[in-house]
Amino acid sequence: MPTPFTHLANARRLLADRAVPESIRAALLAHESAFLLGNIAADGHHLTRLKRDETHFYQYDRPLDDHPWRVMLSRHPSLRAVDAEEARAFLAGYVAHLCLDEIWWLELTRPYFALREWGTREGRFLMLNILLIQMDERDFAAAQTTAIPLAAAIPHHWLPFMDDSALIAWRDMIVRQIVPDGDSETLEVIAPRVNLTPQALRALVDDAPHLEADLYAHIARDTVAAVEAKMDLYAREQVIVYWNESNL
Image (cartoon, rainbow, N blue to C red; front, side, top):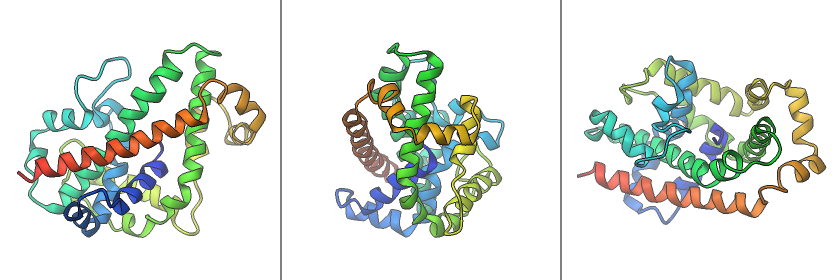
């Protein structure tokens, strides 16, 4: 799924999106720190005993019966009655995160990397991660613009399934990478997943002819761009739906 830097880049676009009703955008901007933390919170599960499906609310080997963010509210009814606008902004960010991942899985990962058989399964997994790294590096500069407000996010029992301490640790792990003197740790995080060293992974990411033959011959760049555009639109739509429903 997209990395935290890509999620933060999307959050920045949402905050500037004039298609988001002004009242909602103003509320999100007023609580920008909480909104930004919400956009990355789901991926902090590895700092807890939680499994990925316990923070993303779907599993790769099962069909989606509903939108993951609605599953989250169904499993945790207390999130339906959030009074503090700061907490609502955080949850709006969480909704945005789940929406990006939902479309990424349904429109790209599943049809092009899980169901299609090209190369080996391990090779497809490697190419998928290289695609995510390329997006991550593209979005790093946008993520850097969120460093100061993200660092200021202080959760107040916003999630019944993840402790504030885990959210803060995850916040700090991301902030240290995107501050002006920070360095991305994406290669170090992904390399063990694909049984490579960060140096070997770096070489593959930079090997344009190899990627043309082993990645983009199987999924066109235009297809990736179209899926990303759909992700943005869907996240915007569902954040608006969530906000309006939570304001009843």
